[in-house]
Length: 411
Image (cartoon, rainbow, N blue to C red; front, top):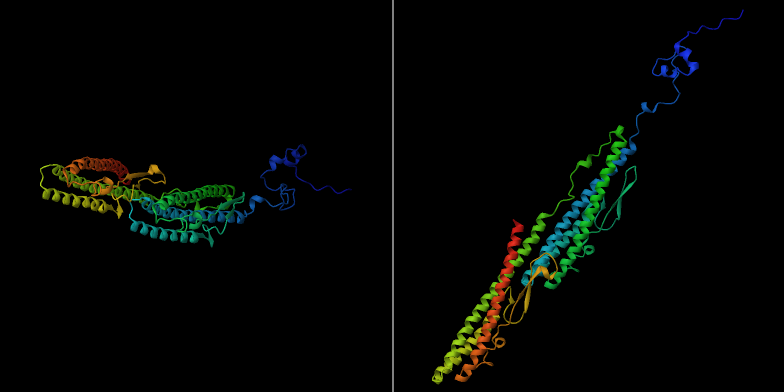
């Protein structure tokens, strides 16, 4: 007699298995009693990934690179901002030197100050660094950040004074015309710095986006960008240096007004002297005047004619001759650009006795006839001086209007 087969309990799962309906019932249930001990009919023999710890080595490394990139951007921008401020201080000095009203001694001092500022920029450009890499001396082209999704290339730059064009070999403030050209050089240098700062701002945005992607994609690793919330100098403005530029313009305008006032004072004194010469000429036209009195009038005329020359030579501002013919005009730099529209031209004149036609070579009042003919020449000289005075009044009004506007900007 054949042995009976081992009795196996009939279960619902065994009944439904041939119909393919057992799987839903088996999900999450205890091991089938018919299975060998410790086995589950669902067990595939492969490890369950959800039960394994996630490898966070790579995302942590990527986040470290992103944070390093953010720190580099912050340091680079901080150095560039400092250089930008120094460039504005150079601009303020160039504006002062560009005004032809500025005294030569002051312009020499401004040139020395420029040299000091340029040396400071050079030091900054060669010391702005991160992790041993100088960022602004042109020694390295870029810094690469690997993010897992790709590479971010942070472009570095060269902000040394020779590259910016603001070193003492290229920028000279010792002459007004050269200082005016220096304004264009400083403009170009500041554009270079601003362009790099803008590039860094774009890099920062890209790094922040990469950090966000890493945090999202590897949420299980709890990788956090601690540097993402740090404030950087990007977007700030060097207000103090910009105010220094306006203050330099205020100084220029005030000196222009001072020059106009000095010119007006000298012209008024010459006008008074010419009026006295005219009185002498009128007195000498009398046919009945005794010879000794006429000779006295002639001597007085010669003295006053010399006084006109003395006054013309003595009328100066910042050691600049105003009425002796040495300068036909002077430009006061009143705006922040190397253009004629940013300057006020102060027209001067030659009010020496020979130019006015009242020197002893031109006039002789030792006779009634000579005195009579001299009056017309003296009247012409008076008209010339009055025209100079009128021109000074107009220029003073223009300068005072500009000064009011600049002072409002400083409020």
